[in-house]
Image 1 (cartoon, one colour):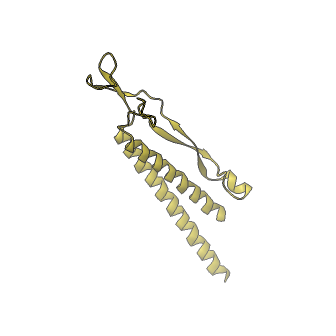
Image 2: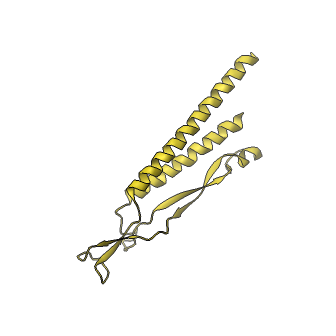
Image 3: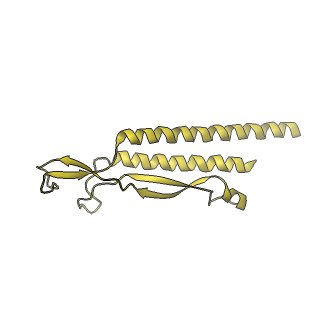
Length: 138
């Protein structure tokens, strides 16, 4: 039964990480320069999940649940914007902007919140079943 709580917990942790990535994407929507001050528009990040929970204390727990396997960059094309007066404009007057779409990020965030809530509900149901089991034993 404790494995069920581990599964729900791993799901909550994974969705929290996914929300952190989404927040970073929205925060960096207008970022054109990298940490060194070079023109390098921000690329959208994506949290990739994988089955299993490598941080679990037992072998069975490591086979269940979910974890963030990688946070990768979205390789879709950057957005072009006509800004001929920008110091970063190319010969045609266009600058490249981050490939972050706030609508997509908001939808992903709503999905992550719903998945988080589902894991919370599963954990609560497991706790109630454990409590009922203990009442039956005593």
